[in-house]
Image 1 (cartoon, rainbow, N blue to C red):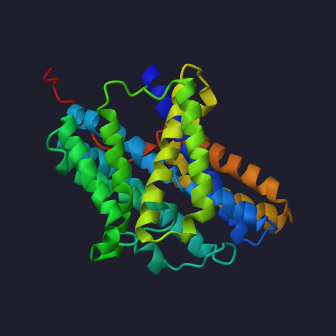
Image 2: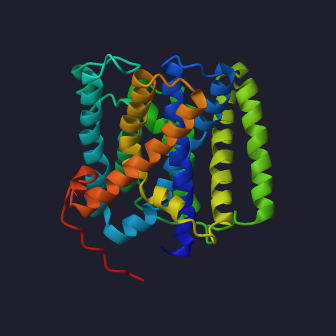
Length: 339
């Protein structure tokens, strides 16, 4: 792997680990295991303030390069294969399992819920649903790739984020309005001449302190804010979290940790499979073996939700079952460089 990309894999690994932990913790809480409620909500709010915006930001970083490399039509086909296809496939697979295991899970659903996936994403799959439509919009919208145009689109997405409550048909556009601002921020970030500007130790400490202060204020007082102050506070706390993770990962990017890189490279399979294995682990450990230790469930459930999907991905590649995670299409031809 090229040196300049290691920090991205590290950032993806941090984001996916936080996501798995967050879902495991929510499963423990909803299963009425004896978790400390104040601790649960405190950590939950911190994680959910920034970990999904981080993924949209990281996805946006590669948009311009992908457009230049593949062209619009080919990039659309790639996103159909790598985002839309696994979204539909695994929404049906996980949803069907939840229907059959209704008596063991925290939330009961039926096949009508599963088959509503084209207009109402379920569970963790809302991310792929949203990301696909953001990519479709971006493939069409980024007709120019100079910094001024990219900055203008970021400001447009910022306006959508701030005023999304004023736009009719909120249910239809809420996902797009809430996360395009982070994707567009990643695109703008990619236009910087030097993306490693957060690598300094002093900058890392500064951003970390800002992150702590913002998180504390928002978690403590966020619910008391009115609509627009809360919207700007949401944006602030999300971006401080994003830049803290980026700075941390850039600072340690010269240190190669293969296990973290492996998790970062397997984020899609972990994202798709972690609920099945993480929830399955909790159901078996608590329901069949009577284990109610919250620290055990949080640690073991998170590890299980990370490691098993990595192993599944490894064996899928080894056995030629790549169709589990992407629709098999003929590899597009790269565009010739105009430089």
